[in-house]
Image 1 (spheres, helix red, strand yellow):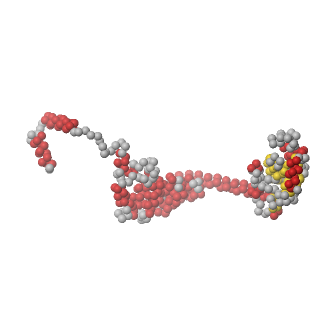
Image 2 (spheres, helix red, strand yellow):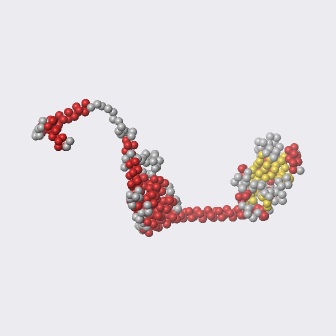
Image 3 (cartoon, one colour):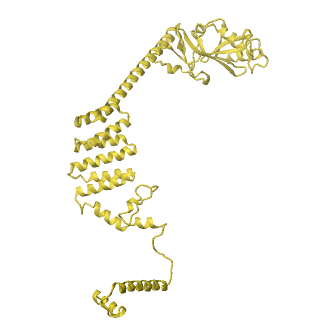
Length: 408
């Protein structure tokens, strides 16, 4: 029914064909029409609202629309899982399809999509979109520079500072005076504490804008940090050189005395390092042979008690010390009795000292009044594991007889 016919029908049926109304009549008519409408609505059958939007599903319903989908993705969702439907897919194909758009338009669309993902902190998706934009190889140099710079920003938020700097370099190839890219490269090089690189980037920025204070202040700070690192490097090199010289001095001292290590003499071992003399025994760790102020070799020494399978360890035993002096300190009259010496027979005056020749399976007795150096320079003595060792046995004991018999 045409609108004119519908109006005439209403006037004829409801208003009796009357067309001229006073203000009072119009007001009365409006009041009556309102009452009729309320009466009609009350007469309708009541039913629950269903198949519509609720508090629980409104976001899901809105997400079905391609305009709202990127904004309504849950923060906890995995990147790349934005809601998608047929309409969204269709629009996306049109937006990024090179058959429907020029390379520049597609690159611009990827840039805008990347910026949107960046805004919502979806940095990996942002990187992916900026990368796709660059793949279009559009002729617009400014757009390519922006894509590289924006990708650098996303990389920076991901902690990929080196990748960000590379993008800044590429951005400047498209736009040599692109200060945003220089600023970002400066920040990333500072994050990497690559001070030489920071100085170089600040110089690049100052060549574009000589008045920029950030470049000046950052360059000054980077130069100071660089000097500190160079100073520390020189100091470390000097310390290592000093340590190396000290080690060589120790090795030369051992060689000059003709001390034997293992099965080869020091005189025949030109490639020896102090690492070869690092003590193997757990108790001797960190007590490597060294020279004291008198240029005496100071050794870690083990006293081994075969009868009880126990050991005593002396961290610093100068080669000029007499062995009995140390025995008197450990097992003399004033020393506490060792907990394993139940019979209290391991007293300094009751002890005999030996060293073992493993090659010939022979025992050599050691004069308790000799110096450590005299023992170490014995033709058959060998320093094993960087730690000289002496066997301690109680004289006039049954164990001594049995122990010595094994070697004879």
